[in-house]
Image (cartoon, rainbow over all chains, first blue to last red; front, side):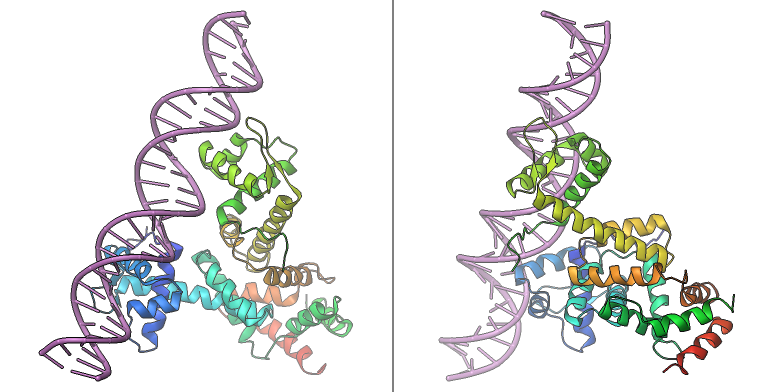
Length: 166
Length: 166
DNA sequence: TTTATTTGTTAGATACTACTAACTTTATTT
DNA sequence: AAATAAAGTTAGTAGTATCTAACAAATAAA
């Protein structure tokens, strides 16, 4: 059992992530900055910070700026990694429009389990850091999506390696 | 603009999906069945059905069983397709434990855009319906995940086809 | 330093979702 | 048909998350 398990909600996770991102830009994390970043009104930010503060995930004294605790930072990092992995998959593998991919990632980042994230991360590493560059099959997929049928040339090559080697 | 756009929530989408699934099993869609299926109490079901009924997504007369309207059925189908695509990706591509994949799909199904779903569906079709069976690279990924490094044999073959053909 | 502006906060309202407890209707037994 | 059980409903409560309006504190300008 994880001794530092906080049951955060999607909403609170969004706040933690936003705090980490703003902080990463060497900008002071203020209520106003969070309000703009998350497109919510300032009283909503204050209410969220109160909860996060009670849960020991942020430090926030009245009228001063916000800091993540180590626990809060850990959660924020996890959410951010989910976000990046999902966005990367959508953009770099599926070739989804970056704007849509970003929006989808923002919503899905709250739903991906650690187990799946780990696999997805490895998958992206395997495909995108391929020593031979963009794998042939990924080009084949883009052809397939564009033309609605498989590329004969790629298929022939695929076949060539699929059988003799086994 | 979509003339039949209902802003449903995750929760209401879950109800629509469950109705479609129960209906697909040729079982009467009752409050009790939905209550069991979604693991919520019956008053919650009644409240949800009232909203869906007001939005014209289900037909539900007091004390009788539930039916999807065409509009409701369309939304339910969309959610179900998202669910299946996500689950299939997690299980068949990433090799995530089926139980975890199912849970993740249940949550993520509310967050995937139509654009991404279309791409994901095509991707799965491309990979899983490959005429040559499970693609070599997918085996390569599983090796990579298990051993933490790429399979030399697969890489050599990959290299062989990546360059001469281009 | 007084004034004005920005920033942060509180209080109160609304919407969503689920719950329990109590009640009504329908279906099943006896 | 009366009694019992099951299914469905209503009313009222609670937690989450958001909003507006009004107010307080801190900062910047005059």
